[in-house]
Each structure stands twice: as C-alpha cells, then as structure tokens.
Amino acid sequence: MAAAMRLQTNKLTSSSTACRRTAVIVRAEKFTVTKPTLIDAPVSNHGARVRHVIYAKGLEGEVDIVSPMALGGFGSEQFLAANPQNKMPILLLPDGSSVPESEVIAQYLLDKAGGGMQAPTPELRAVAALATRIHDQYITPIQACMYRKMEAGERAALLQQLVKQLDVLEGICVGPYIAGPDITTGDSALFPTVVFMTYILPRYFGWRDVFVGRPKLAAWWGRMQQDEHAKRVIAEVTSGLEKWSANDRWSELGISQQLQQHSEHKWVYP
Image 1 (cartoon, rainbow, N blue to C red):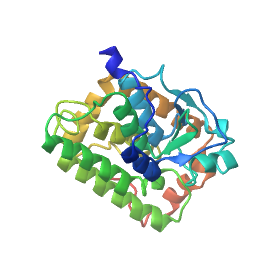
Image 2: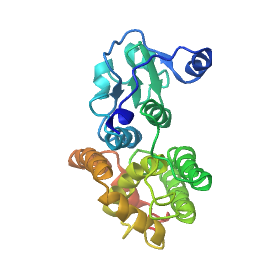
Image 3: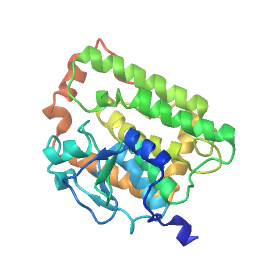
C-alpha cells in the first residue's frame, strides 16, 4: 500500500508522453530541484487543492513545498520561465521542466502516485469533474469580489454571481461528499475556496451564514472539516486570511468603506 502511494521515479519517455508534455509542461531551465517542488503560499486556495492531494496521498516526503520567492517572486525571470502566466501554484520537476495550473498538478501527482481520490462510478466521477469545472470556470474568475479593489457596481454583480454558483453547487452535491461516499479531487478543488467564503463573507460583508438555504453544502462542509487532511489545509488557508485581516486589508483597499457607502447594492445574502 505504501509503495503504491509513492511517486514513481521512472522518467516519461514514450512518444505519446512527449506529446502530452508539450501540451502541459513548460521548460524552466533556470531552476534545479532534486525532487518535485511545489511553488505555493498558505493563503492560495488553488495551491491548497494540490496540498490536500499531497497530504491525502502521503506524498510529503516526495514533494517539497516552497515560497514563490524561491523563484524570485511573481514577475521574475525565473518565475515566468516556470509559468509564463505568472501564477501559482507551479510544480518544478527534477528534469528541469515545470507543471503549472492546480488541477493539472493534482492530476499529475495522482497519476504518478498510482491514482486515487476518484468516485466509485462513472456517474459520480462526472459529478466530481463537474464540481471542479464549476469552480475553475465560474468561481475562480469572480472570487476576487471578496477581497480585491474594484468598483462597487462590479463587486455587487460578481457577488451575485458567486451566490448563483453556490446554488448550482447545492444542486449537484450528492453527499456526504460532493460526489458521493468518498473524498475526490472535486472536493479538493472546492473546499479551500469555501474557506475564503466562510471567513470573509460573514466578517466583512455581513452574511449570517454562507450555507443558509443550502443544506447539502452545509452537511458537506461539516464533513470536510472533520477530514484530517482537509482540516490541515483549512488551517493553512485560514492563517493566511488572518494575516490579511491583521494587515487591515479590507479597509486599506477601501472595501469596508465601499460596502457602507453604497447601500444601493445588495451585499448581504440571503
């Protein structure tokens, strides 16, 4: 069992693999690592998805986790060589290549570790994939309405869309986890962003409870908080958000003032 959970060390050499590498792996010649190394930060909800996979699969001895400053920080020559999109997380590989994008990294690690974190049937696997797709396609582009500077009208419109996506997730949630009896990568994708919601929306936007009217998501969130690996990630992301709070982020960016001054918009749901 332990052997099955370890990353396979054989290099990818087949022609079909070479084609796949061209599609998803970016060369990062200026950074050398002796084992797979994740560029990430505790507050990153996207990196948190990958950390959850690392913890759940027992890969901590196989994968290092370091700060973006190990590549010189965002926008540096090394960082852009590893990911021209200038985003994290990034997985650096010992052969000098890098894998960007959180879902690609998560699936790569699972593939190397022999699989796992999948639902038991094709139908439930489709639900897990759909949950991931909803998160990455529809929630990720709008989540900044909770914590970045923007015009009041834009923030209100994006917040309304965020509410809609919560309702969509409520509709697809199977229970007890998002896609049935087992934790899948669909859960890994969703729960770190829900940490943002449960931390920010009650404190700064005045929500009573993110899960009002969403009983399936409420039960799902309760189960995720009980999982030892998810609990660890929740604590990591929360610690990053607490640092934002300690630095008075929402006042410094004028968000708190904006919410008070623009009562013509709806900020509190339901």
